[in-house]
Length: 228
Image 1 (cartoon, rainbow, N blue to C red):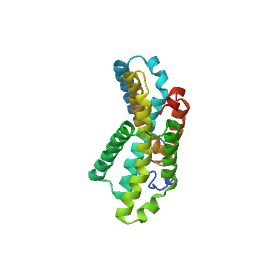
Image 2 (cartoon, rainbow, N blue to C red; image 1 turned 45 degrees about the horizontal axis):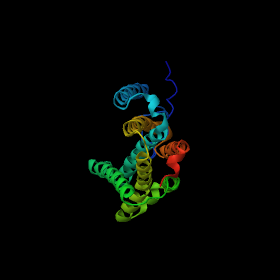
Image 3 (cartoon, rainbow, N blue to C red; image 1 turned 135 degrees about the vertical axis):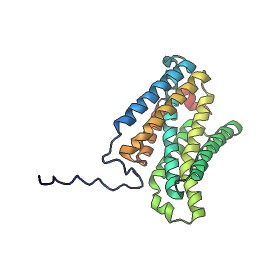
Image 4 (cartoon, rainbow, N blue to C red; image 1 turned 120 degrees about the vertical axis):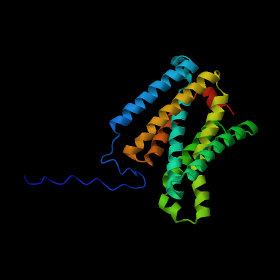
């Protein structure tokens, strides 16, 4: 029997989609099953702690903030791995940096008068645009000290702004447990949406995050929008 035609050669993997094990832009079924189980457990756990989901409706914007934050964290981890190597030291530094950015946002919001939420949303979206426009090739061409400074600025500006937005909005909530539950549930959903990178690439997560933050701004209660 003559041999059949050779299988189609998959497109080469790049920095934005470094998935050598995927022939097509798809999420494998086993991933979808696992993510579905994770979401089911998350729904039950948050429901048990934060109460009925109908009580979370006024905090839909906090839910979207949680989703967007996990996407930003994922983009930061993968970006630093590309710029400085995929090592446990680099990952530890990135996660530590995220935690420091969260703490700094909380302390800045607590100690100083920060701009209104619409302004902070503008800073956040500007940070996302900056992260989209700055090419990795340019960052890689910089000397190591300058590369580190530029990478920290590009990665952590939107993270810091997002956490200032969250801190200001959370301080304005009437039910801390329910509102935090909505945000935590959003973070779990964001952890699952990270796998969209298998289809759209890691840079595409910035677009998804921008859409989520625009949705959060649109759902912002008027009273929260005008609070200082």
